[in-house]
Image (cartoon, rainbow, N blue to C red):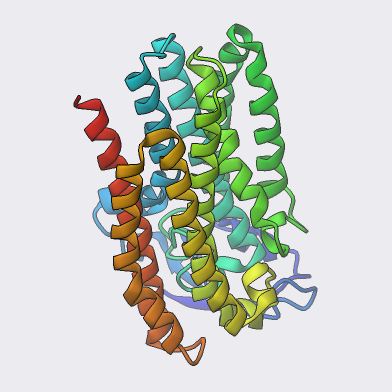
Length: 355
């Protein structure tokens, strides 16, 4: 039997319903959230027996819960640095490289899961219908389970990182700052940098230079400038996707009081931000190729990206409102640009490896 329960933030059962610990055989699906992120927050839950939860194929549930598509954010830069070192014949320690790969992967999964947990508890994923994996909101898994899985993968990540820091002590200069940034992002219930203007800069550092330089050092190859600049260009591209997602959600985020750079700038200035950000990515990518990878690859890659960017820029100019299907179309076109850039860069590396 399905029933509905409305609770305020001050209710003693409020957190247990959000966590999913109120009952073992039922799920509390958040239907409506009012006054989110305030002391007057009120949530209406749909209480559904566990046996009545609609599940897709278990493979689809796993893929969506772990947000497998987001793995590109770490697997691509790791591949870029790895292929560079293989081409340069500077891969000194394959075993350490394998451990570092698994360590980064586990750390990313931990952060991803913790992000879903915190955004559910804070209300972000309950307000923004396209945010997060939706695994908690659909009742596929309890929030407390996501939290425990995050802790498990975090322990695994440290299990891979500690031996590497023993062998290569200078890795601590990269791993420790990354751990601090991750803690600030995910383990503080209030005032996380994700909800502050310009807080995305820390994402740039974490998914850019810290990631690529740390991976480079873990190979025993030593620091080189190219791995740093790979991280800078990649981090800039990652922030394009972050700004793009925030732009898609600008209206409901603003209504709910969530703060980020896009919301602070507003609709019109955010359109210019996205267009300018993408243009600068192409400039930085061309500069990187000119210095490290060859002007011919850089020229043709930039030419191709510029050509496929025209329709995206055109759609951005035509946008007249942050509501409606046009926003979804712009997001899809912008995300397609990101995937094209990734595909071309990976193809380039495969080309070098084949020679």
